[in-house]
Image (cartoon, rainbow, N blue to C red; front, top):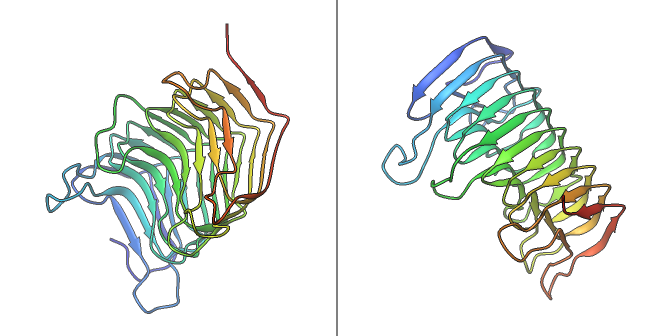
Length: 272
């Protein structure tokens, strides 16, 4: 547990068989200073508890970051964890998550349910999960709850879950989200991003571009919001579990219809 500290680096460490957290970093309550923490080339295995520490809900993450600036998680291996990475509850900015390998996590690779997240890059990670997920809340490989300037790019994602799941929490919008050049294979939906019905423009300025979506169970891309571009994606063999859409864009409820949604130059088909 890292508290009020600056410039902390974990490099080449191995953390195994923890029922709660692996590395937990949190800015002290009431302080304006941020923690800058680097987790590099480390291994996290069997972290978290499906039953929860108190027997209530699943809990635990290999790396948890609360109130961070300039933090990095690079070149790590995650195996059989409940959650691999968690950026949560507060102001997190200028964070890089790249070149990691995640295998068989059971709830999230990366999740953000905090507010005021800025300039977060999640790139060049390989994430896979075999089998059927059974823990509470379902399996979402990368989730975004809030944020401004989040980039999700060049990741390779496969397995039984939703590839990228964006669901704005509370009244804070997701702004300027870029999802590009990722590869999704054998997932339920590749990209699901929608605002709460009845609330206006909770996802604004999203670009979904250049992604490869293969063998989705249902929709490849399911989005709503304002000022959205969906272009140059390749979608193959969508809907293997039943009736679905390659791209479902624009739903937002009668009180808050989506606006300015552009869909162009995508390739949709089936392999022979």
